[in-house]
Image (cartoon, rainbow, N blue to C red; front, side):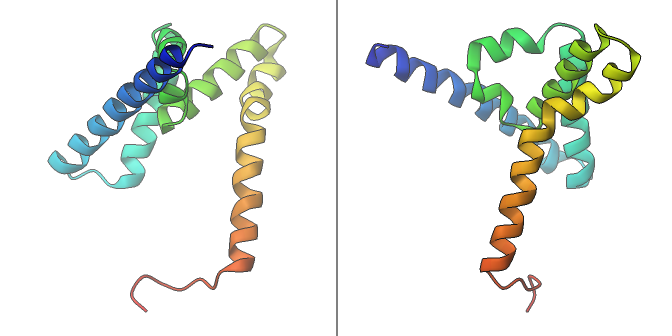
Length: 125
């Protein structure tokens, strides 16, 4: 892989990921929505855009720039469900869980390790 291709890949990922984060920041600044509601909206947006066939081209263009933000988690769940639905109803329900299991497991394991290493306290202590 040529160095210019690598740089271009990073720039595309940064631009798309940055645009998704900028949209989220605008929503935070100009609405009274809580962070949890914004998170759910973006995840559902990833699912809806995947169902409409609009998120896959974005993933192919930007790679991690589209899959790392929370809308990428919605994309992951939707693609897992669609792949599972090709095999049957039960697989349609378990497909999203199978698709996301590695990432969720890693988050739980690393969070546990960090909780063992560092002493937690409230923000105001």
